[in-house]
Image 1 (cartoon, rainbow, N blue to C red):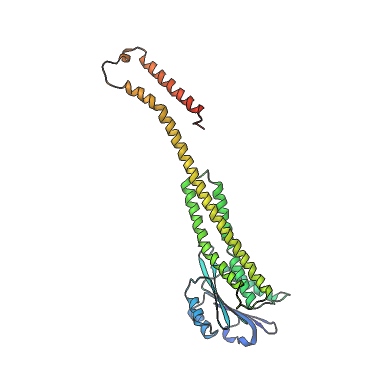
Image 2: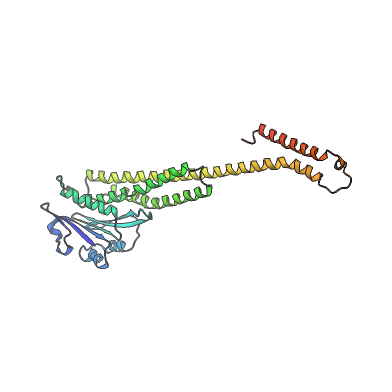
Length: 319
């Protein structure tokens, strides 16, 4: 599907006019959005817009790393949107010229819809739209980056919940959830860090003609990406801390179990020794003929076990 937005030199706005009816010279600037394009629609990148073959090839071969290429009359951007369900990157390509803005994406993008609605609203507002393709490109980038935040906030909420459940679930389950969160953070990092590097290049590029006000807009996106990067690194450190805490908790539990078993074993060792001695099948054992031998041995075993329990308690082994 291709939708168009054309702004005439007189400020008149035309929506969804077919491309073959648009003469680029008759308009101040146009935006053509290729959403889930067919092969015939993709051919228009060459036959209608006459973009460079390498840029068109990059559109066809996904998934490219975020980048910026300079051509004679347009700048070509490769951006990454985020699939909120799978956290996988989805490519969005931009062609930005002096009077031309073309977006190309193989999947529907919520950020693109928000950017389109925002530009249309600004154009029809009382203030009008003072910008052109470069600010429309900023709007798209801004919305794509804004859509990174909900997924990261969700992960942070999950980490906070994991931290509070440390004493109520098994360590194995908690460790499994921590490693799952680390895996999702890694997916986000693979998307956000290249976008941050791209935005830094845009800010320091001498080829993109923009004024100081427009650069401030791109600087705002760069600040968002820096914040996202810092949040990811902080969350990764938190998962590492949780992992270490769970390992320590598991070790403490094992030590407590081993201490309990050791105490029980130590108490029963002398009792087992006494029982073993009087359980031997010798004919000549003086104590066997003693009338009160049985209760006396039980009493000795009880006193011995009780004294050992009291001694262990005084030494703090039961704390």
